[in-house]
Image 1 (spheres, rainbow, N blue to C red):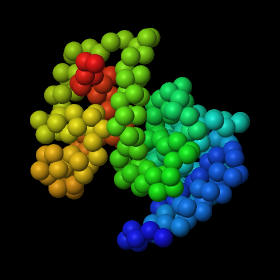
Image 2: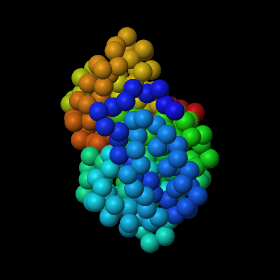
Image 3: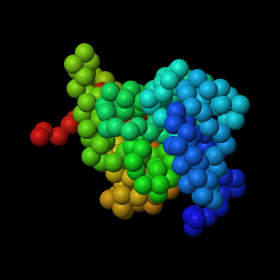
Length: 232
């Protein structure tokens, strides 16, 4: 049982997977947490969207490979209709063919299905808090793939300069650390700031960059050339 302090109300979680065994496992260990509550489940993306309309969950744990409507399209539909709802994508593979489209659709992160229960719970809490649920190594792989798409135009210096002009020097530093995969706690330690101060900077960054979460901050920073990939 979690020792996490109880919230005013548990965060409402919708679990979506086409495998009943996975749904059952997710429900058991999520409901064991005082601050989380499974309020519904679905076995395809179309039902997931309908359940979001009926239940208004705080977060959806979304499988990617499903019948009727896959998890990427379901994520896109949910984020479009309910922009305050968070999505944590779940996949059985480290496949960029699924994970990258899920992030572009608005998922706040992803975990693989064979993760330990505490890792999935930790990822849920991170995404609920507006943080990324990507490991540093995975984030680097995904971002590298996003910014090196063969059909994507290269970054424009004017776009990077325009974006940089909207951010303070401190905010630019925070963006750089986000792109390296650091958590709020790690950023706070590096910059000798409190975590609430880092969260305040992040809120300002999200507003100025016109994105919804830190994953999208990283993608936009690389795509515009505000941050560049290190030379191998």
